[in-house]
Amino acid sequence: MTEARTAEADPSWEGLRGPELFEACLEAARAGNKRALNRLVAELTPLVWNVARGQGLDTHSAEDVVQTVWLALVSHLDRLREPKALAGWLVVTARHEAQRVRGRKPPPVPLTDELAETVASTEPVPEAEVLRTERDQRLWLAFQRLPQRCQELLRLTVLAGRAEYRLVAEALQMPRGSIGPNRGRCLKTMRELLDIEGGSA
Image 1 (cartoon, rainbow, N blue to C red):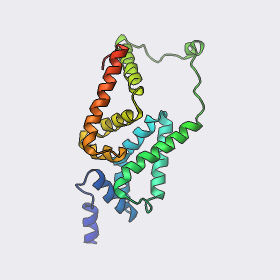
Image 2 (tube, one colour):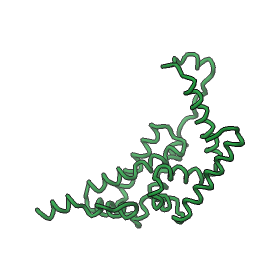
Image 3 (spheres, one colour):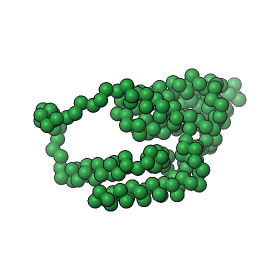
Image 4 (tube, one colour):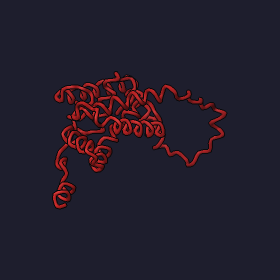
């Protein structure tokens, strides 16, 4: 009983980060440890969510994708060959599921001027908010003109932060040392696109 309490208080993944943490938690989850699975969900759900949203899904659809991906992992716990490649598996699975969901969604209904007039505004939009919205639109337009690889790299590095470049490198199957330089080139390209459009970051 004492040994069990000690293992519970000091799990095998304590103090680990990145792929090592995911591997230890996955192995424990395979043995039936619910805390280990919960830790994986807490650590990696933002990554799965970001991939789903990056495929153009709305919030509700992205939530469905996240749930489907985690259910898929639970059903594949014993079949995932490389535990250290878990983040990459989640990225690929989330991308495929998001593309499947996006493919079955009906096209959005265009908002005509007549229809727009029937939609009540909940609050007045101040001038500063209008300017911020215009700036954000320019940023997103420039972002969407980047190559897909750049878009994915920027999403993941903003999400994971510099300290987790290992996770990004694993997910994108890139050398860790190339993440920073590639990120810099992508940001430079985005700034050039903004300059062309007359905007600024």
